Amino acid sequence: MLKNKIEKFLAKRVLILFAVLTILDIVFMKNKWLVLGGLFCGTVFSLFRFSSMVAVYAKILSQEAKQAAVAKSVLNYVVSLVVVIALLVISMKISMSMFTGMTAGILLVPAVFFINAITEGFGITHNNFE
Image 1: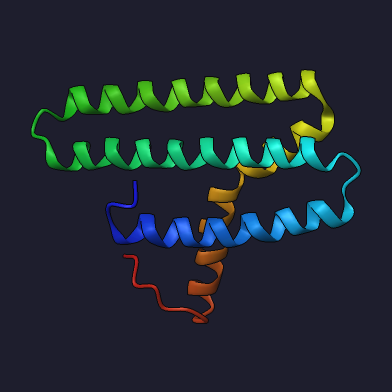
Image 2: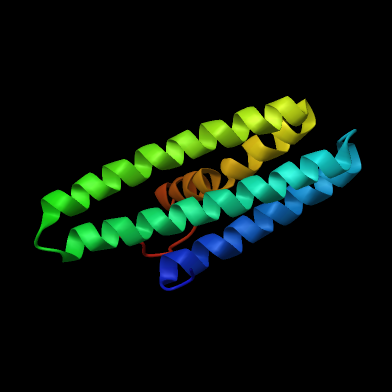
């Protein structure tokens, strides 16, 4: 992980959002440790999922045998969705507090991209990801 500019950008922003959510968890949540555990597990899984998808898409763009690479990418995506569903079901069985943290952790990476898209769209930041 952290092989290129976008992965470093993402890791920094996810770490910042993770810290903010951790502080909010400690201040406001009832079951602090369950939420924090779910948040940590969800964030780690989301980062690994993003990293694997980056690697798969890099292979698709660089290989000449694209049909096999595309099939692997679709399989990777479907397997990652099944793992997300399994993690959410397991966390829900343990506790709704853990489910809340896990959901927030899994959504950190998409939230970072969403926030970046909004700030780029309004011209607030210029990260030059084209």
